[in-house]
Length: 129
Image 1 (spheres, rainbow, N blue to C red):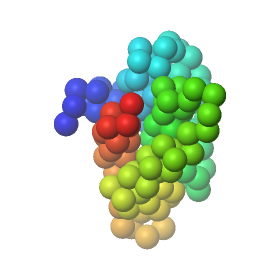
Image 2: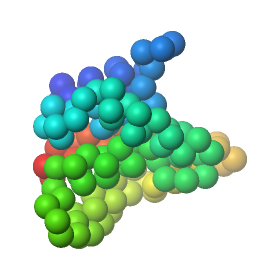
Image 3: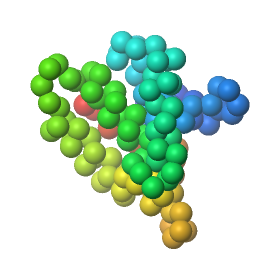
Image 4: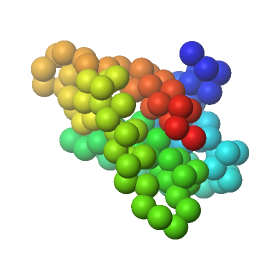
């Protein structure tokens, strides 16, 4: 496990005003490489935590990883292939991409914990940027 993965999980598990949601935690550990401030990435990722706040949508950790992929790979041409590969790797490693399903809401069967989604998103992103 990389120190970046550990840092992302630590950010996600903070409490109070220093708490980061899963999207923010993933994105912010790449702030320097992406050329953006922690504050900017926190703002960009604010609406993506907890499956865009509803648990019905895409995992915030995956959203954060996709935002950083775009910041680091986009050079005027589509990055659909890279984005699809990141998505596929995440779903294979985590068992899905929808927050509610990953957390086991309604089924009681957790496919991947939030901390592991964050770790996996960072690991997969590290392999691609």
